[in-house]
Length: 404
Image (cartoon, rainbow, N blue to C red; front, side, top):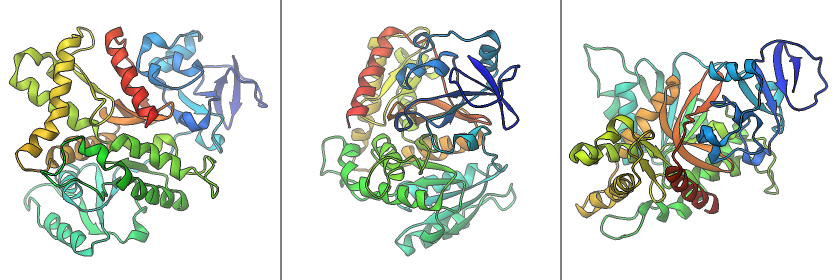
């Protein structure tokens, strides 16, 4: 391992680089992994993440990332003061320092349907200290006008100020810090579909997310691209692929970085597990120690606990959470309030504040749900010592997402 002084920063790497060598505790770790399957920059939560040959599911398990680094590097990882930067991404020199963010962020929402409108309400009610404004964009001008009026009149006249709400034209939709993609073309009507309604929307919504991902590339969007539409996790990967394709469809790395895109669908699955855990004492430990992993829907993995993992109870609770969507449809209603609040509005605010939340992050070519946060040095994923039985479930889910 060598240490270099680059642009005033002390950088460490196992790569040989044409820069002056230096001494001291590193601020940046430089590595090289295939750009199509690796983030451009992140905050390591375990030392082994720096030297692993590839990114992937093992980044969520501290036992599966071997550590062979010096004490000062391990210390920097433990304090979360080290930023890891991928030399394989174009323009890596510009990422040695994390981009600065304003104290309050502007959010724009694409498509003001049931989910878009409900999550906008959640952002307005809870985002006063976090958001500078909320923009509403929809091809149906009346839908945007409807929600602008409703949200503008939803206020506490004697309380703290709420984020201002305004209609945003399509050509200005990327003039923001956070873009929330909630557009959809193919939600199956209630009573007409008995399978996984989320996956039924993949083909219909794929073209929509590609269009906005290409727009983000053209606008050189530097903010967070949040995918809320179903199926969240495959659409997040579609956005990444489309944004980074040249005119011949080949990957060029000139679009959205993988860590700029996040899927917001896991939160409601965690919340549904908590809902059932409150109703049955057998699952009560999930409320205190539980975790949610994987996609929004089939492939979900709930764990009753990490330190006291019970495979049977965890699988039972997982199935209850997965079936909750159909339970609502059996009542004759389309489920959208809980997803809009638990998967979108609240986790997006946590992400904006740099707080832990549930969401899908890029791991080795797939967007996989886990607990994560955006730190001043970059994206960090929670890394725990996972029981073998739990990790086997995660592997099966991860492989399914890679194959989609």
